[in-house]
Amino acid sequence: MFGVIYLAAFYYDLALFRYYPEVGQFHFLRNDNLGVVILWYGWIATSALASAAIAFAVPKQMAERLWPGWAWIIPAAVVVGMLIYERRWFVS
Image (cartoon, rainbow, N blue to C red; front, side, top):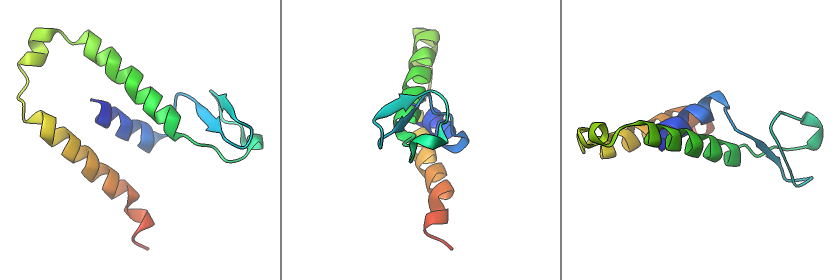
């Protein structure tokens, strides 16, 4: 689930917090006066917290019934989704 949530956080700009390296500060809200922002840390934190919440909420019996092939299909779909979104950097 981490990859799926990361893709959604990346696409919809759902960072838990923002890091401004020029001033070395973390902020929960956008602050354009502090310079360039790094969102990656916030995307990772958002994905980790949401994935952990889902992992704790899903009963073990339900998780064991899932087809093991999803462990390959979902990450592959996430990579394809990221490539489609990022193609704008490679195709003009």
